[in-house]
Length: 240
Ligand SMILES: Nc1nc2c(ncn2[C@@H]2O[C@H](COP(=O)(O)OP(=O)(O)O)[C@@H](O)[C@H]2O)c(=O)[nH]1
Ligand SMILES: [Mg+2]
Image 1 (cartoon, protein in one colour):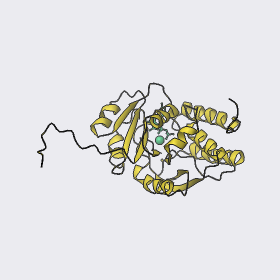
Image 2 (cartoon, protein in one colour):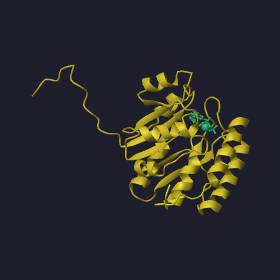
Image 3 (cartoon, protein in one colour):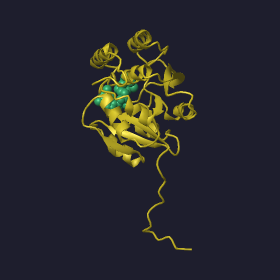
Image 4 (cartoon, rainbow, N blue to C red):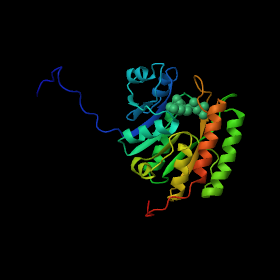
């Protein structure tokens, strides 16, 4: 038997079975809670979007892989994570401790079993203040518009989700701001994906909101999402 010297490289753990994309803008306070809940064997891809609170260092110290994305915007962060991912299945989760990455386990099982192509978490607030009223109302209105546009009956358009990496890339998403999650669902529906939705607990975030907790963020989200809903369906094989 050959002695293992201290200079031997650590055994290659092999490719991750699942990559979890965690868009992150100044979430140092939330990162420990989020990262310790990423299921074993999965890789946490923290996409740092120009944080100034040391989020990248905290994430690295906690064992996450850090991807840097200069361009601001929720979609820019999510898409950089998707591009950096290598696992067959990619999940998305906010990095603010409002959603638990461990809740993604049944989502991944469903995608792996071929029972769904995109699984979404329907946010169920566990405490007052987890979800501001205007955000809830906006989301409900959005679900109606989505149903009219695609026929999909969803009750939320939450950020917790799982799908296959190559199929996600093939959707060719272009939004890089708040329309990204909606565009993913619209294009998935147009492509005939089976989209399912399951309840997940939604807790008040740690730290301050960048989107729905601010007027500017809310206004921008409404504008971005309206634009996505006005897009003509992408037809396969259509000349570009
Ligand atoms: N809005 C926004 N969020 C970003 C950006 N980059 C990363 N994020 C992350 O996206 C997630 C969702 O943002 P959040 O402020 O919680 O939005 P809210 O849940 O609508 O209040 C958080 O994990 C943010 O840190 C960015 O450039 N803009
Ligand atoms: Mg949030």
